[in-house]
Amino acid sequence: MWSPKLSWSLVVIGILGRLGTNAEADDGLPSMGFSSFLPVQATLRHEAIVGDEQIRRTYVTVGTNLFAFCVPPGFQLDASNPAKVVLTPADYKCFLVFRVRARDLEGVAKSYRDTVLEEYPDAKILSEFAQPAGTSGGEAFDLQWVSTGHIIQSARVVFVESSVGTVELILLASADNFAGSKRALDYLRFSYCSDKDGPIKPLQTPSEPPRS
Image (cartoon, helix red, strand yellow):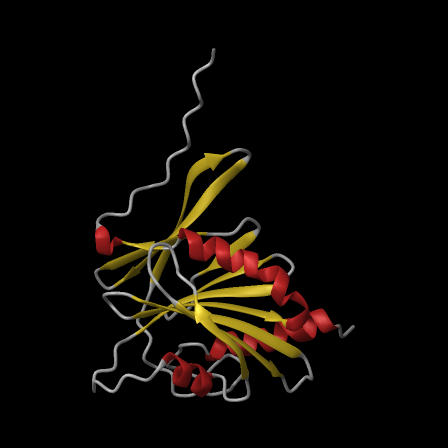
């Protein structure tokens, strides 16, 4: 039986297939020319235990650079695509994407706004604002558009500069689920870090306070 949930999932699968691949997407649509994304390798590690929750942390290697961020509870990691890391909850209400855009070799850098409009040509930019990731500054865009299946789709794209290229943290969700999914992106965004300031240390379980 066809359902809005299934329709939304298929729409997003098509979008994810076009985000940063050199080959054609699984749905047969071309990659829209966005081949300038650096290859990434991701590993998942279980680290600190906070309360009843064990923190799961993703380490992403990009060349000689290392990034890390925590996986929101209930989300699963998919690192099967060499150009991006995707995090997905069991109910598929939203998708989180991490990828790194290479620097323009010709020295013609586009603005973040131009990059967003080129990649999402049918979208309307609802807002543009500063949004940091970890200790790094960032610039975010909220977008909305209507898919061919008449589903209102929303996205938040956060650009963060790094020594190797521009990191993109992306939230994709239907308009109905967008507001509630921002917390998952914030979980990733607040925990984001890189090795630009030194080695990334594992998260340690907080020590119990001394008993009286």
